[in-house]
Each structure stands twice: as structure tokens, then as C-alpha cells.
Length: 116
Image (cartoon, rainbow, N blue to C red; front, side, top):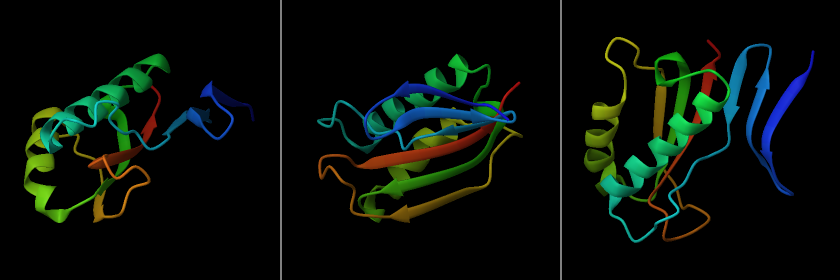
């Protein structure tokens, strides 16, 4: 079976699609001057854009892994997530505190979704 990769770089691809399943690389904010709410909104915007490129959307998310730099930001991240996620289509999710590669990043989100 063929594997489709999009936005291929030297180190990673932003998206891989195999057998109708979409795998996104960890998405981070480009504007790291934002607070947790702003960074989470930006990251989820990246997720929306990447899913749309392969004919999917947030209602088709199969699983989400969320990494946050500090659990103190958990309520702020959840507030944005709760506005964004599709009611009735909330995916299985894990949220963990982790030291992210860029200390200015407050949140990173990894998504697996189904194509439409």
C-alpha cells in the first residue's frame, strides 16, 4: 500500500497518509510570544489546515496526544480545546506535562485521523 507524505522536510513530514489514516507530526505554535490560549488556538489551526489538505477534518480525529510544558496551563489549554472540538466527536486523548524541544513552546499536539 502506498504512503503519501506532505510537507516533507529533512527531519520529518508534517503529514503521512496510509490506508485512509492520517498521521500528523507534532504541531507547535510559530508565534511563541502568545500565552497558552493563543498558542493552542494557533496549533489547532495548523491541525485544521493539515487535515483539510488530505480530505479530513476535526470530526474525524481518532486520537490526540497533547504535550504541555506546565500543568498550570492545563485549564487554559482545555478551554480552547473545548471550544474547538466537535461535540459528539471528542476523540480519545492523552495530555502530559513534558519539556518541549523549544522552551518557548507551551503546547504540542499530535493527531491521528481518518480520511473522509
